[in-house]
Amino acid sequence: MKEIKVIVIGGSAGSFITVSQILAELKSDFCIPVFLCLHRLKNISTGFEEALNIKSNHKVHSPKDKEVIKKGQIYLAPANYHMLGEIGNTIALSIDNLHKFSRPSIDLAFDSFSYIYKESMLGIILSGANSDGAEGLHKAFLRGSYTIVQDPLEAQVKTMPQSAMCLFKPNQVLQTKAIVNFLNQLD
Image (cartoon, rainbow, N blue to C red; front, side, top):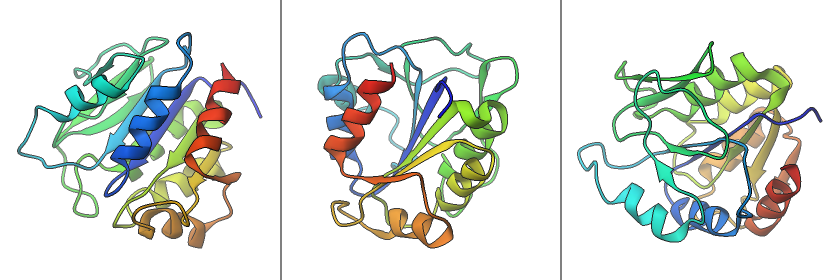
């Protein structure tokens, strides 16, 4: 596995607890940028980021369009915006059409970041009620990105992890504690 330069985590229904645990247990000097692409209500723009910050040892914030990616940052896709990686080490925000009924789209996040970072990206898909993320994670895998799927036996809603596993065999299928341990060994 090559050096990981970005981590993209996608999740939907049932993923909040898992994401909170990951953020709470990341070591304090963790410096790889993390992008959280999580489905949430599009008309409520406050509360979600604040709730994650209560749980996290690291500051979570919603990026602005064209924001430069910095080490040690946790980026949360803003409500009702696609969050994409761009050439030039920046983040693009888009209000393009919904993808699989979702904006932000996990597929689009995995696809755009893996297009730029290829084998230097780690993609993680968590609990969720639809298949958004499965195709994007598969594309990332084909580009050489390292892929982790939350163990469906642990996921509150199994659809998203199982959809990914129906498309391809990810590098690893892990429960939350093992995901945290894996991340803390990267940095």
